[in-house]
Length: 202
Image (cartoon, rainbow, N blue to C red; front, side, top):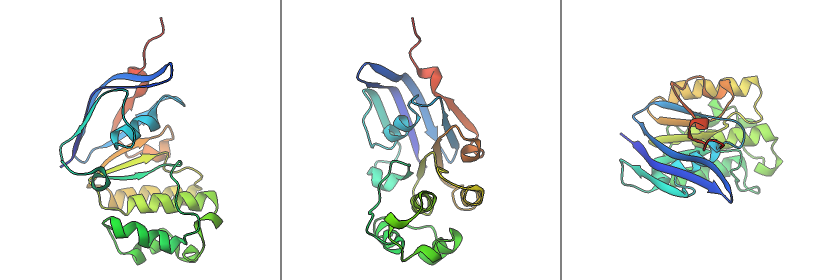
């Protein structure tokens, strides 16, 4: 079972220290949420945990010695997919490299993406673009699921789909969510407040 251990993690951008002395272990199949004001470093810490960027100081270690591509499934509003690929092609390409929890047909049915399979990604609305990205993350079998503001541009129906998918298909994963929106992290039992790791003003 995966655990992620952070030892004396700090991140600085130019003169601003986002957080420092972050010592924490994420483990088991627990569900965590990173909370903090805008620009407090929630997304940055999530990327550090997933190995996408390096901390300015400190170390992240994993209990399972394998590459990050196999450890994590990740979704963020900042992610870019191939604009000229159709929705169907994006799913087919993604799962050439990732293990799927359910068949592609079942994924498209659950996420109500069948009407859009032949549309290019660039042609989709912002909400549908996010649903495609989030679907790829949620339907990927990986030890850990890292989600940055997962319900961005979602209506109530899509937010419900997200919550139900988490409950039905993601309980056996370690989940870390970066978000201040209750609907995105209502299922998380462990709360981490980043203001506790921000340098105090003198």
